[in-house]
Image 1 (cartoon, helix red, strand yellow):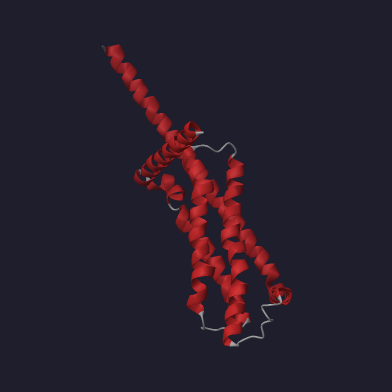
Image 2 (cartoon, rainbow, N blue to C red):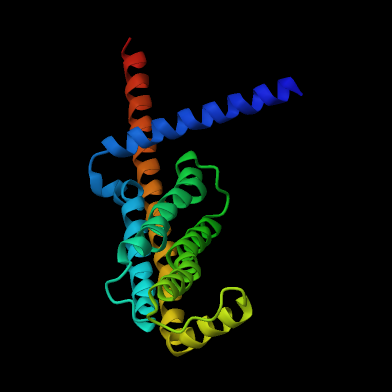
Length: 216
């Protein structure tokens, strides 16, 4: 039991060290265009999530007539949190397997990237935005919100105000999924570019070493 735990700790430490080395290589790689997607994935994820979450949040705030009231209170949980979460989840479930080369199916990784972005950029804010808007609307008396003790009525009200914009939400969800997949595909392309160039460098060094040995 103790040995297996130590082995697991050693494997995690080795993986973390490998990730650190890979990140250092990516950050210092020239030309930077070869690793653009690998280097800026967090910015891309945050940009996609922020745009989507802002749109969703603005819609529900407009429906319940909050205007500028309680804007900062909804900013952190509905807009900023999904953006940060998207980058962290993408790093853990997409970027890390890529740079460690532990993935077996490139298409599966791309799908995973799409699902991560769909969750963080659409599902997460869609769950929080109407609840936050209803909460502040009830507190500020800007909209007739059903009693919180009757959750079914509250859900029905959320469904009622969501129904008119569902087609746009479907498009937004598709854009998040496609955006996540496309960026992951770009990361894969960057990875193969770097691996190809590293392979050529190793071949050149090996040829140089053999030539020196032959000359001796």
